[in-house]
Image 1 (spheres, rainbow, N blue to C red):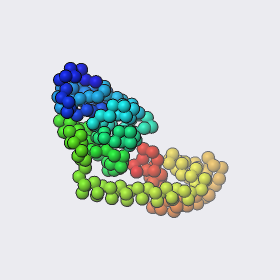
Image 2: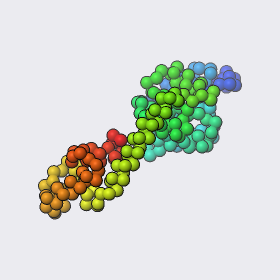
Image 3: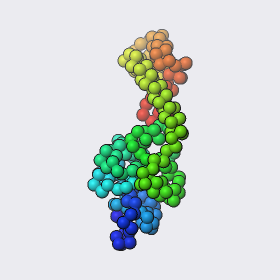
Image 4: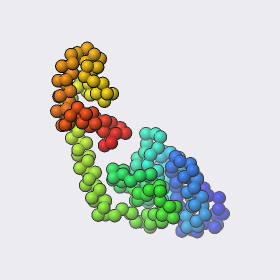
Length: 231
């Protein structure tokens, strides 16, 4: 909670909860909010999404400023979904260091009311907080429709790739893993105690089943499909 005299906080002040695992950022936001009579911190900033869900359910702030990425399984998107379920009147602003179409769509699907870059100034963030507290949703409808169409196409492509991976045999999956590690056919053959020609046949099947143009393309598809990959 901020250290102002409660009597000095207007009854109409917008009540905010801040969640980010970068304490320098949360301290800075708390300082800015604490100096602006239009806003009130409902609690000291929290640093995990689980804490944000718990505090939001308990305190029902008007707005939660929510980071996306945390060093744990639960993300800011997950927390947004849970906050919206537990406190439907609370608006969530997703804050991130970079613009990402998939994250934006996931934020909208989770119920976020705005998506703000961490490079934005404090005045911009607080202006967004005022807007969403008044019931606005700060997504341009036309732009969002175009983004959602692109993401829907990318998701369908991912599902097609997943179906392709399901067609791989256990041996092909093992060989693909070794290909990702950078092993050549003769190295894979030695590791699996099979002939190089057998490995070559499996590699051709892997390339065909994944719809790849080459061995290197098959590896790129596999790497993009892994957590942290490009897809």
